[in-house]
Length: 166
Length: 339
Image (cartoon, rainbow over all chains, first blue to last red):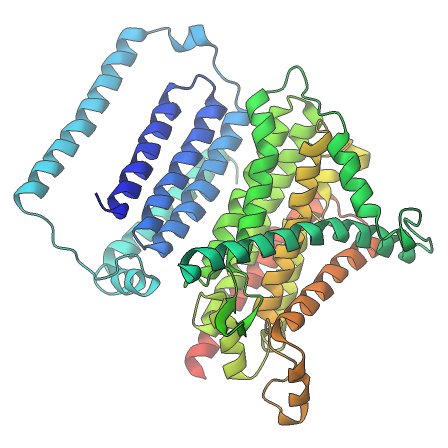
């Protein structure tokens, strides 16, 4: 095994372990902490692939931005007690099972289709600032703008829902 | 071998030690400057003019009893000071202290590394530091630290937006995200960005003050309202780590401000031949000197200005600094295309 493969598997194992800890820890704040660690490990994975731009954006947006808001919400909202959470185990299990089956099924489909026809690497150094910017503002300009509008709509909607009187 | 492992390790060792020693002496400098501003002497007992006071302070903090409150979340309570300090230290990986120099016939860049996304790295790593503050307040399981940590993190997140806008306009001006590249751009364009973009400079410095929770924006530590801030329940070395993190963050902001606005390691007017005799001072001394000026201004402001009210602080952040930051991005982008 080359050293690159060894680091890939080490970091990958780290990601899986943190992800398991996220779903198994009982305390919500601990779970969010493991989520941050997981995002940082993913950023590490990008960094080992020489995509420093994607790695820093991963830290900035996910670890540094979004999860802070999760933490705010969890800290300020009263946590439900254990008994309340387990009130309807049947329904919980069914919904969880459907979600897991959907995700695993999608993974299998992706893996099989990738094995049949491997996707060609699209750009030479995928994580560079220039490459990402060129791709976003030429080939993917319309999807990019559509996503921007979608986010704007979501933001306005959230404000309207949160404050009934404006 | 030497270039790949020994040299980076040596650089890391030197920079880390310099930062930590710098932080301890910053504390002494702060006490001295504030004392002089108030016509006092400041610490005078330990060593000549109190010069050895930091050593006494560090010893005291290390031998103090380390208390964990009974109702605290033990693991998070221990982890929070580390989470606050580590990002403040690893930011120094991309700070360019000087140009390439030759030491014993070997070309050495005076930066631990020069990432091509250096500025973005600074922003993303410092955004992790807020976890230390939030978690310290939450894990203490005590109401004043929780309130203070909410204030601190809300303040940090608000001002981060304005500062990031300013950074974007600097990147537009320089055309690169690399820290060394930004200094080079100032050399090529023949002007320090403090003069080319004075508005950005002012907004960045105010945002930096707020992001490091320094006076007059030291709301999270408002003693009169919140006893001691988010670290009320901490003692001994774990309290010292928060202290270290705050001062290390001040040094980070000063280093970034020096790089972006005062031309980093460049001497004053590097393109004017009449002033080329200033070149006998090595670049890293210019850099440290400019950084020191910023640090001194931090202390000077603390000794001069009273604290803002919390709603005033938020109003300045959202209604003044962020619009100014966005306007600055637009104007500098338009100028960049036109000129």
